Length: 189
Image (cartoon, rainbow, N blue to C red):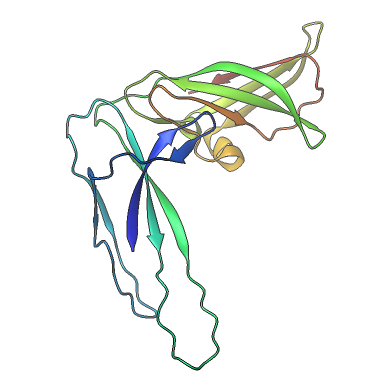
């Protein structure tokens, strides 16, 4: 069973919402798949073709339980997973910019926390760009610098998707040498 669910941007990513899913067509909505076989599902935007902003959805792929024979002991395992679907204007452009960065301590380690905003007309991925991190101590001396490629960003924080008008904060699991001083971050091309 394929079940679409609208998402709303949050400070740290996306959360399920009660938003409209009628603009997303999933075919077939259900399918019976024989053992050892595969099934392709088509997900298509049928909403406004001139939409001026982006929309975000999960399409839940939910395996439904089957009826088991009566009088027999059995264990049934069903799988459910979500596929992230992002829809944006064909000529839209993301405008990603770091608006805040700070040092946070988690489990005894110091990491950069980076807030990225998107003022563009469609969603954008930090992993399609890259991220430069620099830490200076209290006297202003540089004590750490690292440039992360898009592939490295993807390995550390995922795609790093930022919706239109969203400011998303991500803790980047790159150990900094000290909890003091300041950290700066910038999006690289």
